[in-house]
Length: 163
Image 1 (cartoon, one colour):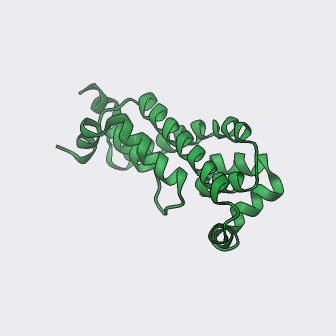
Image 2 (cartoon, one colour):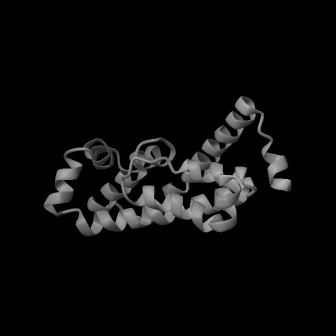
């Protein structure tokens, strides 16, 4: 049984959601798009993978926001946002909603953007509304994964989903 089929059978949508929740909640050097790719190759539909990934991403970003809100004034957090998280923190501080939108659609660590929003008392509802931009970002990256696999190794994802 292939890894992707195993992933879908044993973890399914919740596995995809968890794969997005963790890196969107805490800054870890890992691309969550692997999980949507595994899911679709394993037989999950594009839309189902997108829905689970979006749910995980929005939940992770929300949890990251509350982490930033809770820990934002601690010395340790301040060291982080003046060290490795400085660029994202400064973007949110200076550009507000534009920084959130950029963080939602680019490879900038979304978790650090969300932490920064929490620490800077950015409105949670506004963060959540702008975070819906994660949907086209997730869909685009998943499309790139599928297109790349189709082009490079001739993988027919539609036939996998029909099995």
